[in-house]
Amino acid sequence: MQILTIHLQNIKSHRDTTLNFSAGINVLSGPNGIGKSTIFEAIGYALFGVDAQSFVGNVERFISIGEKRGLIEVDFSLNDGEVFRVSRRVGTPQKWLLARQIAGEFEVEEHKDSKETEGRIKQLLGLNNGRALAEQFELVIGPFQHEFLGPFVIKQATKRRDKFDEILGIASWRKTFNDTKALTSAIKAKVDVLQAEIGSKQEQIEVLPIKRLELKSTAQQWTQAQADLAAQQQQLHELEAQLLTLDQQQQAVQTLQNAIATHRERIQNGNDKIASQKGLIAAAQEAQKVVDDTVGGFNAFEQATTDFAALQVQVKQQRQLEQQVAQLDKQHGATTQRHEAESNAVERQQLELVNEQRQLAEQQLGLVVEDEIYAAAASLASLRTEIGSVQIHQGQLAGRCAGFKEGSEKLATGVGSRSAR
Image (cartoon, rainbow, N blue to C red; front, side):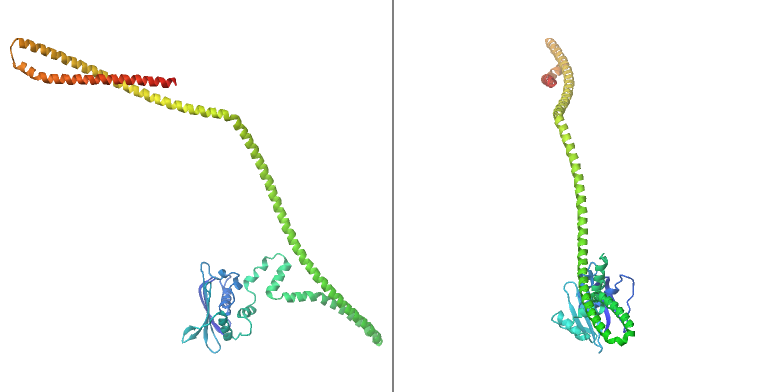
């Protein structure tokens, strides 16, 4: 099988990327963060059905920022030359489709579910060995990059090492190595002792039967040493368990110390706040005492302010009344002058009328009728009408003067009563 092309749309840093692979070994190079590892993850996701969470821990992080779904398409050819395309969507709804190239076009095969699609891909790739495709991909590729981020923040070296051993799959080997390390050391020491004894006993080959008895005793000692070693291994396990317990207790103690420090700081802050509140209470009590002592004077001041405002209003009204009285006096004077002038004019006209009547009477006595007399007689009616209108106007002026006088008296009375108040 050979991968021909891969197309990524809205997958992490690849908005729309297509890569073509050649036969043999292909190398991906570029700076960090450009998306080299994403290519391997995309192949695992589309061709082997690995969950996106296995790569990034969160499906949303497998999709480009700002997008809701992505698409991965992988074209591959088999040894017989057939070409297939597997496509898998990221997001909702998820689809995993397999299509065969026929006459230059890809036709999607009908599968009832993803399990049937996975079985078909297993058959095409020759990986139908009982294991899931995702498991086989992880076994070949190894741990994913994001799995290495967590252990780096672990502060304890032992736990950090154990986590890396678990990720790399060597935790069992390290446990076996640690368990047999003490046994190997004891065996080596015993072997050294035996070699020294064998060297010293070479010269005593003649007394081999005796040495056989000693060897038998040594074998018993070896058996006893193995038993002791087993007991020591048990003690070692117990010590490791105790060490783990001590580590947990140390973390608990550190947490308690941090909590105690936090509570102490809160208590100190509380005491400071209490002292501040006591000072504020004392100041408030002192202020309340001052208010109680000055409340009578304050009320008197408020009443005096109110009375002063009322007096100001009265003074303003008095000034307005005085101005009105002055205007009325001025109008009264002008009216009086006009009345006197009109009265004088009426008196003059009356005198002229009397003179004219007297002259008319003298003329009548002379029985001499002249044109001037006829003209004067003709104008007599109009003069009488004019005298009547002048008399009416004089009466009106007299009434207005009486009204002005009455208003002046009332204004004087009102001003005096306000001043008394």
